Length: 247
Image (cartoon, rainbow, N blue to C red):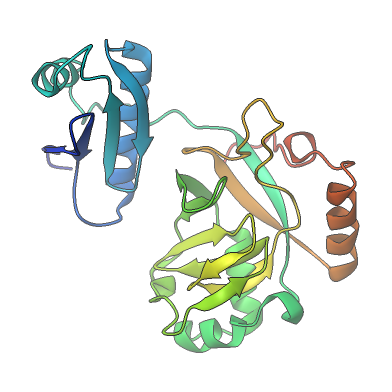
C-alpha cells in the first residue's frame, strides 16, 4: 500500500494524537498498533501512556519532561511506519457464545439486512476469525475486526438504554462484546458469559489489541453453567478460554 503519512494533532498541553486516516481499515489499525509497540519499546522520555484507536494513537506526556516538537522528532526517528513486518500476533482466545433467541433480539433484522438466513448469520459470526482492534468504551470492551462486507451495517436507529452484560453485537463489519450492562446501539446476536474485566487481575482487561478471537457456539444450558461458575469465582477465562491455535 502507499506510504501512510500521519498527521500530528495537539490534544491539550499534555497529549499528542498521531492520526493515520479517517476510516476503519485493517491497514490503518496495523499501522497504529505497530507505532504503539515501537513507542512501548523505545520508552521515550516524558511519555506517560499511549492509547490506540482504530486510526490514531494518543500519546499522553509530561510537558515538564518533554515538548510536543521533541516528541514528534523522536517518533519520526523510530522508523518507517510502513515497515513490511506485520504486527506480531497477540494471544488467541476461544470465547463461548450462545446465539439462542433469548440473547439475539436483533438476529432477524441482521439476517434481513445481510440477505442471509439467521442460522447463516450466526455460523458466519462463529466461523470468522477476529482481531481485537481497540479496547474501550467500557472497561475491557473489545472492538473486533472484521466481518465480511455484507455485515457493513449501520447502528440501530433507536439505541437501547440497557444492553445486557455479555451481549455480542455487530455493526459496521465489526463485532463487540459488552462486558457490563450499558446503553448501546449495535445489533445483538448472542451472549458471551465469561468476564472480560476484573480489577483484581494483574492485567484487568482479558483482551488486548492484536489478540485473536473466535467464538464457540454453546447452548443455553452451557451458557448458564459458565455464567454461574463465573459469578461464583470458579471460572477463570484466562485459563478456560486461552486458545493454543494461531488465528
